[in-house]
Amino acid sequence: MLKELSIRNFAIIDELNLSFKPGLTVITGETGAGKSILLGALDLILGERVDGKSFMKQDAKCVIEGIFDIREYDLKASFEEEDLDYDSELLIRREIVPGGKSRTFINDTPVNLKVLQTICSRLIASHQQFDTLQIQNPSFQLDALDAYAKIKLEVKNYRQIFKRFQAIQKELSALQSNHAEWASDRELWQFQHDEIVSLKPEIGFMELLEQEQARLANAETIQKNLYAAFQALSESEMSISGNIRQVIQNLQQASKHNAGIKDVLGRTVSTLAELEDIAEWCEKEADRTEMDPKRLEEIESRLSLAYRLFKKHNVSADEDLINIKALLEEKLDRIQNPEEALGKLQKELESLNKELNAEGEKIRKSRKAAALRMALEVNNLLIRLQMPNAIFEIDFRPNEHAQGNGLDEVNFLFSANKGVTPQLIKSVASGGEMSRLSLCVQSLVASSIPLPTMIYDEIDSGVSGQVALEMGRILQNLSKNHQVILITHSPQVASFAQEHLFVAKSDQNGITSTKVNVLSKDEHIEAIAMMLSTNPPTKAALANAQELVAEALAV
Image (cartoon, rainbow, N blue to C red; front, side, top):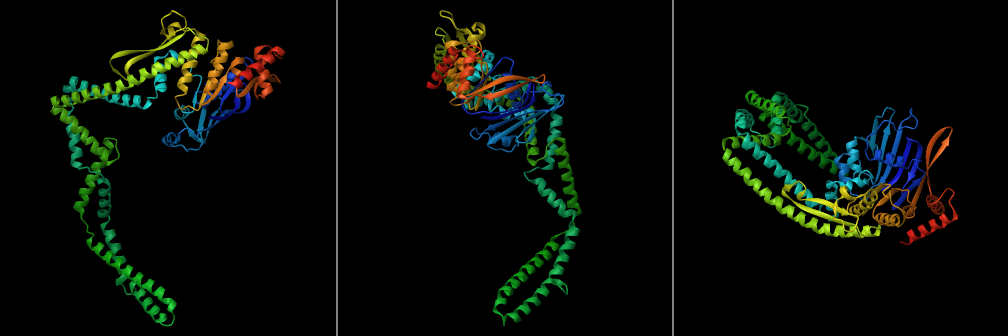
């Protein structure tokens, strides 16, 4: 949920700090006062690119900050994937310097726009994402239906199978058409394979080789120091063990007259035993340490080959070489046994095709059931929006073969007038009809997706009166589960606001700037009255505004 938005030196905004609440927030004001500039600033927070003309003062940088409450939206994994610090309160900042270059920060960590867009796509659905034109897009229509049907995981699984199906198709086609060309590569593949085989790679072998190489290369130093340690511990005239034995004798004599010394005596005896064990180990390890130039040469030769193969194949782990070896063996096997390889791929393709069709049938069944429910709900909403003769349908046409999105082509069909057969939306809907239909679909889809904040820019454009009132009710209902922020020119829609922001222009010293005021209850009514009449509003408009607000509160 968006909590705060701070804007400095952006367009005609000098400095602005806004707080947002849950529920429905409407933004109204005179034309040109800067309402859409607020959404433009939010677009930058969401990762829109800078046009380089965003400054009120051309010699100062533009800074836009947004604070979001994200505790309920399961984003911790997304932050970990991007190596970002997670906190229940998210701070996003864009800094734009004169010339158009920008810097982006998430919780004070610099990020690129792709990371910003990834994170923000889970936070806000903006007016650009839910533009009324999108409802004409078949891809959006299918995504909307799937969101309504709540089959995201099923569709994701289907697409993974389809991706594998395409890969096997491509591989099979390549094997069938390029077998002769592949055969010319056989000598290279065989050489690469034999190189890796000669290395005898196993999991963990590099670490063992490097440890053995270090021992053999430094055997003389190791042996010399181990013998020196042994001598110092127990063999020299002034050995550590000899000195400690003398200490033990002294403590034994003293303990006869002071019982408190016995504890220290016991610890000293234990220390002597430990040192004697260490001395014995040093002697044995020194005896075992041998100079073996031949073995060292073998190890270094093997390591040299390993390093060369790592570089050659652009890998860095034992497992990678083992996997490359297996892949080369598979390629060689196909070249040597093309019929068998073709048979395996064809069998795998047939298996994947069956799996794809089985999963596709499940999705088709879920989509068709959801389509009936969704169409019924949309048509009921259209009746509320004064379109009693409108018909909304979802059409399914089976594809000849399984496609990336399923077994069917899905299209939204619409008719606004009685007796007219529903057709593709782009062919029949006017601007006002499109706005109403779009809101109906969006409100149903939005309730099925986990987006905290929904932002609309004049979704009520082209409608008024009772239709606008019903739109307000739909938006109010939507705001029960989402934070909804709406720019509107409709007094009916504005009457449903739980918070009303009024945008105004002011001219000081020849400079135009934008101010935003949070309206009180009385100011809210007065603003609606002005939308209904003039500034200042008439008494009749004030009475009408009070009625609208009272009706909205009663819902």
